[in-house]
Image (cartoon, rainbow, N blue to C red; front, side):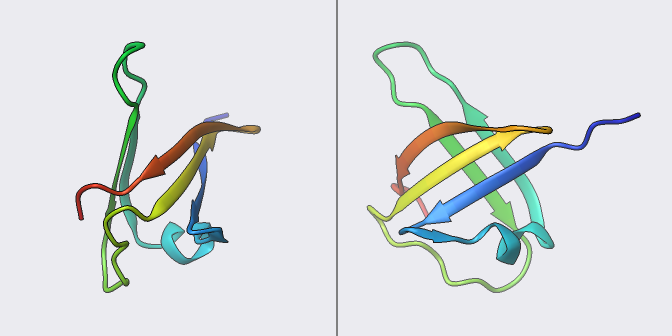
Length: 77
């Protein structure tokens, strides 16, 4: 049985997972060394309102169980 990865994304306190899941092209999470900030990157097909600089995002990744990757501030749109 092939496991399918799952995710959950919260933007400014709103769960937007369902809105993005059908058109999500790519999502990545980079867990950096101690002194550096972790990073996430999203690519979505279609027209969506873009987050603003400084907006808050929270990301969870996993398979059966989701694990919180962290809270992030948008710095590139």
